[in-house]
Image 1 (tube, helix red, strand yellow):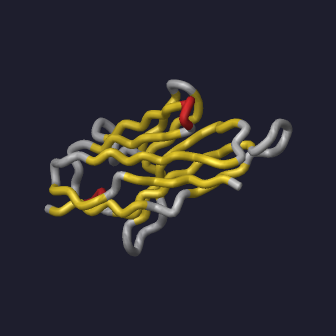
Image 2 (cartoon, rainbow, N blue to C red; image 1 turned 180 degrees about the vertical axis):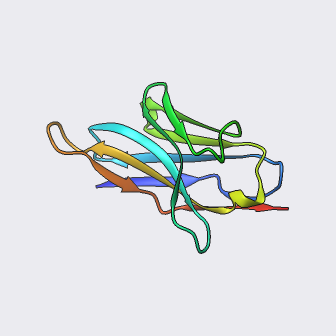
Length: 121
């Protein structure tokens, strides 16, 4: 059984910063990728940022230069540093991970429960 637990969301004023954390725990053999998605009310879930391998990261155009994704490989944890927040960044942020639970098995995607980020203007 695998769990992804997010933390760090909250209410912040426009221009402020927040740091999200997501820790993966349980039966984990290896993690291929970890990332963050978000979903605003009435909108589809969208990719914010992801790390596919060491040093390789992708960002949505809307967050480039403002958000930074990083991983602690030893602790199976991914972080999202969000600076210069805007009202349009308001959403529920979800962590996800593509991982294997045992050697030789297929990898699957797992999701966290989400954490609310609200940016007031």
